[in-house]
Amino acid sequence: MNDVSTQPIPPNQRTLIVDILRGWALLGVVLMNYFDFFVIDKDFEVFKPDTLTSTLMYFMKTVFAAKSWTMLSLLFGYGFAVLMNNVSNKGHNPYAFFAGRMFWLLVLALINSALFFGDILKDYAILGLLLLLFYRSSPKTSFIASLILLFSIPVLHAYINSLNTAKTNPLSPLFYLYKSSNLTDVLTFGLKGTYVGQIISKPYLYTVHVVMFCCFLWGFTLYRINFFNNLKLKTKQVKKAFWFSLGITLLLTAFLLIDKNLKWTSKKYYNVQYWLILSSMIFIVSVICWLYIADKSKRFFAALAVMGKMTLTNYMMQNLIGMLLFSGFGLGIWTSKPIWFYLILAIGIYTIQVYFSRWWLTRYNYGPVEWIWRQLSYQKRLPLKKQK
Image (cartoon, rainbow, N blue to C red):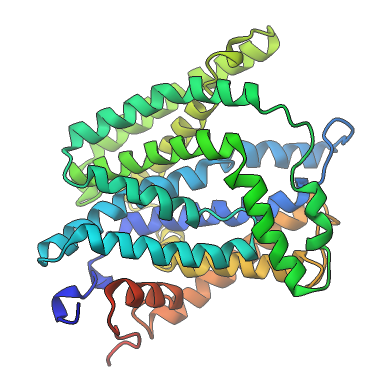
């Protein structure tokens, strides 16, 4: 691939709302990843949080927990369809191209897993290959497939939970590595933590991956129906998504509260917790889309968009910074601070990244990691510095 037709989609042809959504998801990722360091070694049978801590924990669980990686999964499916269409229209084999692209994403995932034990890139790299089965599918086919997965999730979730009898945190025996001042130990913790906490963890290996792929198919379907393009002409559809997702979210919330208070056993057979997560995620997406259509929060959305254009770079940088702050090799903060410290820290780092990304993109075409990944994918040198 050496001719000009292999050039990737130019930055000025990106869909703005997609970058805005990526930027919001990335905010949730850094908040939850840093929040994890507050809760990672807590024994909640004896831990008694104060009012502020309880409030912030509830807020994080309600607004961000699992909402960001599901949103990024939806956007990954959308991006897959965009990329495959672009490559195919230029006369190249999209299957071979995408397989190579996912291989290099897996290499980046290995690096990122060493930095942070909660890497998600490896999942996208492996599950992304399954999307090739749907490359030529109609929106109806991909949506029906997503519904089949959606209705199977509560059964799968309940069944896998019945097999998961572990009462202790599988990462606990490895904590000594992360607290070490030796960089090799810290990186080893990241890799081993990813293995025991995700790769061989049944809830993650089975349930989470099915949820991810369901979101992939939703994103693929949204591209096929051309949803995000000319979004400002689709106010009616966005409002329908808003009210529908809000209604489902409220119904599921009420059901789960009643189920808990009356001590029903429905979760043992049909656990709808992920339905609540997915409906909440769609509600958040629809809120952002509605505000975007109404031209509200322009400065905030501009900040989100600039982050979304460098999602991969900013995601890996957040994890590198986190390692330098929390591990024994760095400042060794670990779990020693109150909850508000981790949340303010995450927002502070995100804000710095916004300014850095804005500065970088005025001078360069792509984020540094995106540039490397694109060159490896397209097997050619691509211009990084913008021409005057």
